[in-house]
Structures are given as C-alpha cells and as structure tokens.
Image (cartoon, rainbow, N blue to C red):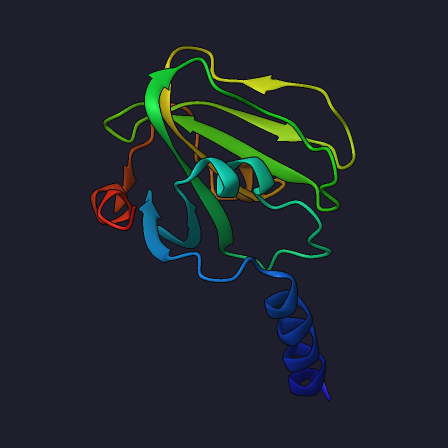
Length: 144
C-alpha cells in the first residue's frame, strides 16, 4: 500500500514539474539534494510555482546571470520553502524560510550568484547554516 501511495504521489509531482529542466545533484555537508536548474529568465520567473508538493531531498537551483542582491517571493507557490542564497563560490550567504502564497520578499544578505530552494526546514533539519559550501555547482553551470 505504501509503494502505491508513493508511486501516486511521485506521478502527481512529476506531472506538475516543469518540462525539460535539467537536474543536478548537489552535496551540502554530506547531504545530497537533487535540484532542477532554472537558468533562463522564464524558468527563474516560474520557479516552483503551482506545485502542490515537493519531495524530500528535491529542490530548484536558480542560476542568475549576475552577482547581485537577488530576492525571492512565493506568489502562486503552494509549498512552504526554504531558500539559501549562495555566492559565486557556492558558499551559503543566508537562509530564509518562506510561506506559501505570499509576496514578501526574501533577499540575499549580500550579492549572490545562486539561490537554492527546497522544502521548508530542509537546511535546518540537517544542521546546514550560512558558511556551508554547496558542491556540484560547476556541473549546474554547464547545463545552461
């Protein structure tokens, strides 16, 4: 019964995922996370909007064309998320929890090259804090 439920949930999640987004496996403090890569304006604008669930150890990596004070919001996003802003070397600058269906901006504490969204509390549950290094970003950059 559990496997049927898991298969159904995965099918529902898959059907709401954006088509044709490449994925990359990232490692942070020994923890692995599979992230869809949003490297175009259109994909960054849509992000994780309209999704009804996000499986554990999944997320979205936003690759920005420039290092700047980027920010995120949750309009049309139904899943509570945490976002980590990363500098160009992959070091986490800051992490913010974001509530669904809000337009509150959550910004980088200093100029960032990337943002990594995952289920709310994913970073805290694993003891990942600002200063931690995200590995695997070089591969994400080659997926543009």
